[in-house]
Amino acid sequence: MAFEPVYEGENPVDAHLVANFLQANGLHPRVEHDQLWSVAVEVLTTPGVLPTVKVPQVEAETARQLIEQWRNDNSAGEAPGWQCPKCGADNEGCFSLCWQCGHRLTTGDNE
Ligand SMILES: [Zn+2]
Image (cartoon, rainbow, N blue to C red; front, side, top):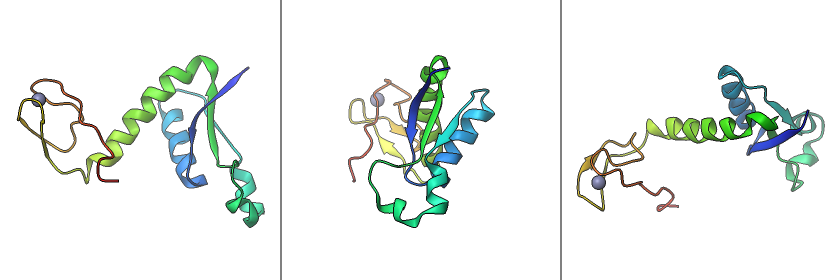
């Protein structure tokens, strides 16, 4: 079965969190490269060997949507409220779309 990478973790913990989340949603993820981290510290600084979450190709589309959702959920706790730049409505931080006009809040402006 062909596997497709859907997520590259910053570290094994990150990758496994995503993998567990996908598994909880009925997918069949596997994490590659994470084993290397525990046996060779040098690998930590080697580019190109980040732990990668892969799923069967047929599940890739679903996995990407779940990961997107997972990221939004994770940031919801700390997200400040925001005012829609398009219609001026006040939105809760957990919304990524304006409740009134559907304008998408672009993230990453502060980074
Ligand atoms: Zn709006």
